[in-house]
Image (cartoon, one colour):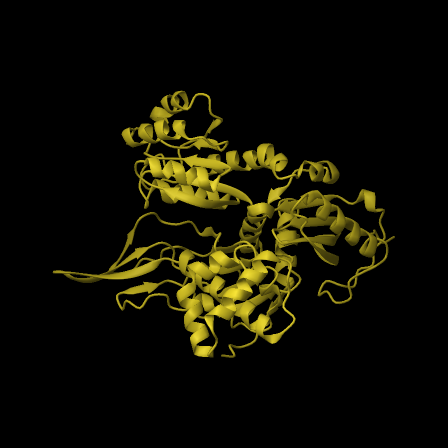
Length: 486
């Protein structure tokens, strides 16, 4: 007797759209049965979750299947109430984290790693001593968590205690997570008495030693214990019967799982571009060494995520227009188009975040904005070579991560999932510096793929329980893109 496949429902609540996918687990493989998308209900996130859940189950859980999917061919029947639900959320800006560290190249850099790898978005970063204007800035950005680091264990304490005293003056509901110099932890907690404070092991107990996992765990717990209620997701917890993952964390762990489980996928990157942010994930060795190459700063991890809150096609379109103004203006000038027309379009889509263009001009503007997002995200994620000359000769100094070995580049998110050519993704390979002595270490000649069904976040929700199946399904669902056409 042939056993019916087990069905799994995965839902992701994004800033613009809420996606749901029904998967059939057959032995060691996952197949997509069907998927649905609805606009995110920003006033109450639970309504959009319920809408997409009901749409997926009513259309696909009782004998229906998606004939257009690369995973089609499985017809299933299963009572909807017996189907387990996995879910994630990045709506309303996700988990906002402000990082406070001692030096930009050391503890602050590690604090960023801990925040972004846990699924958070670093909205501000401060090094050295906090000033009064920094407190005003912190109030304005309204972070969910202040990740407070600084000093190795037994190292610098003066700046740490100064910053603790500053943070004690801050009027903010943000949770303060202290993960700095262990020798002054009790003093820091005492100075911050009356505030909501959590502590974790020092993210950098010794120079060059990184220990971010304890801080990552605390950040995840804060998301579950505090952020869920604050973002109207408690009703979804009750309906789904399980707590959510931050969407970036789900994708982060799926990228790790793909690299571990799928042969040939050890050096790749994923660009997940949405309405509010553009996330860049890379899995590749960070530093390759060689004669006359010196690494400055920390050795970055093989798996890295950066998130750019000013790079998005809808919610963050106006911020994108400002931050990438030079690039956008240059491309418009080449096309003979007035910048004012793009400005008007950006203002319109920022108000109507669900808007999809119906004419060629709107589609060209979206394409230009997408190119700006990809290019900027890659340049910010990648490290650089700088040529330095001394009396002993010239040598290269590397700062940050080397992406030149990335051989595969995947586009995900609503816009990139629909791409049919590699042109937009290949913006990630564009040189970013005019200085002949500076070189961005971006991918050189990657093969490009589109996550055509936008399955990566949905499979990310399943990766913890079904790692091999989720990784293989994610790669199987990618569409290779043709040769560069520009």
